[in-house]
Image 1 (cartoon, rainbow, N blue to C red):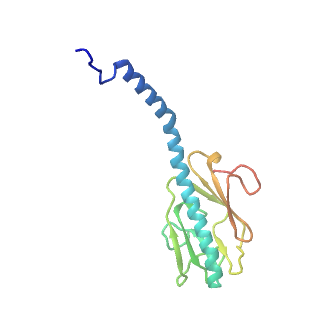
Image 2: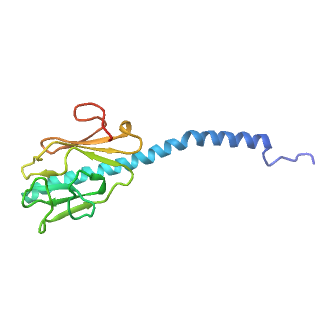
Image 3: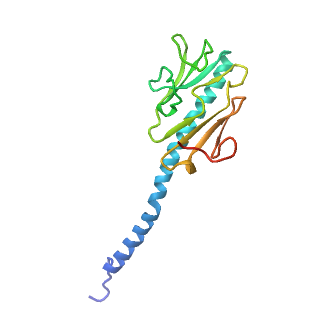
Length: 177
């Protein structure tokens, strides 16, 4: 049997390789969980930004007030700032404040609930006027189970322009409940 080559691994080599792989997985798997939560939060923030841009542009295009409000059923506003149940964008013909979608007011878009976190806001509704101003400044904070350190806020200026931040409008830490 001269010239015979081994075609396998010894038990110590196999065990060493498995320990290295287990160590890498133990180190990397928690990072994948954070990555998934970051992606979910970023997706939700992006949807909210899209809703704001839709409301601003439709207000100018239609020369009408366009409002956003929390909505659990996708057609009417809730009476609380419970944004994680979902929200709607609609043409607010009667310009009521706080905004409420009445019959005959066009629904522009409905957004689903966010089950992976909590959305806190200092306003129950947001309204955008045709001349490019929002009715109020607002901060809408998106929190998940990691707390304020990983939260993001959409801060809306008086002109209606949104920006995303990891700090409050005054530069302090975000509040998650």
